[in-house]
Length: 96
Image (tube, rainbow, N blue to C red; front, side, top):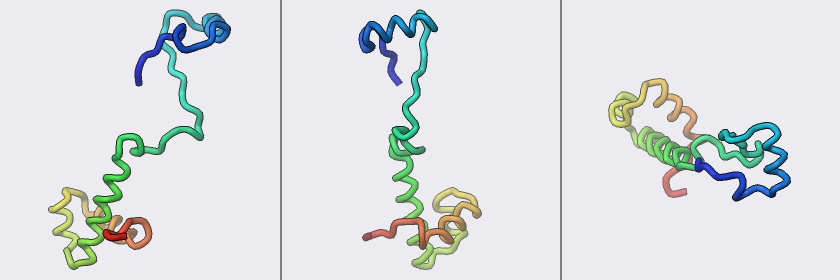
């Protein structure tokens, strides 16, 4: 998030109105709810996790044991089980 000077981006009328409430301080103006990105969408984390989970699911389907996947991906047993058991409905398959 970058700092912007209000006098450079706001109409003078709006700037003067805001100055009635706050002057010389930093104020955060949040995005509208319908314009907010979901977790991990902006930095690509969401997509990376989908890809990782897809890999885990496909390896499991090819015969890898859960214990092997735990060691390979450094995840807890619960995390691996959640991925492989929900994989058929929530994870993209490689090649699709």
